[in-house]
Amino acid sequence: MSSSVYVINPNSSQTVTAAIDAAVAPLRSTDGPDIVCLSLAEGPPGIQSQRDVDGVIMPMLRKASELEESAGAFVVACFSDPGLHALREQSRRRVFGIAECGVLTALTLGQRFGVIAILPTSVPRHLRYFGAMGVMDRFAADLPIGLGVAELSDEGKTLGRMIEVGRTLKTAHGADALVMGCAGMARYRATLEEAVGIPIVEPTQAAVAMAVGHVRLSQALES
Image 1 (tube, rainbow, N blue to C red):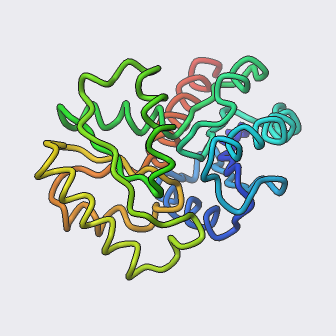
Image 2 (image 1 turned 45 degrees about the vertical axis):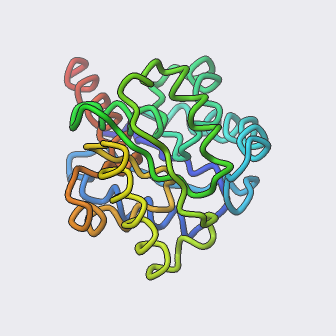
């Protein structure tokens, strides 16, 4: 299979992209499609505000346009899904956003989903999106850990706060599935799930799994 799944991290952090690449490694197979993870050089170190979200849309669209001919699908690897609908208008390929896919996956794993956000300022942005998705009747809560994207590499601090927030979402808000609200959290999924005791969705894995499935099925129909 020659069509690649391009996973575009809209920030410029190579550390985050490396964590994404490791998270999706189990989805790679010898018969493809290739899964290619890349950073957006024009992006900020972390996407933490609506201004950051809006500012990466045009550079991301240009990057996707460059990759269009070799693409089987695109994944927008930021939990705000910046430019998701614009890229769907632009591209002839399937386009998946990690927030949308993460939430939809969580809805298959429990009745009420909760979200672990990075910063308090992320929460209103998430709530606007969940409202647009029409999933608020199965939404438990969205709570921040109070760390920016660059701070997520501090494993002790990050994991401790994620476990605390995850347990609060479960016990105080009735969440029975959780979504990690930032692609930079990817490395902590398995440990967090064991500590909290309910399913944890790493949203880039969810989106890439859907993208890979789509590409394989499409190519099977063409063969």
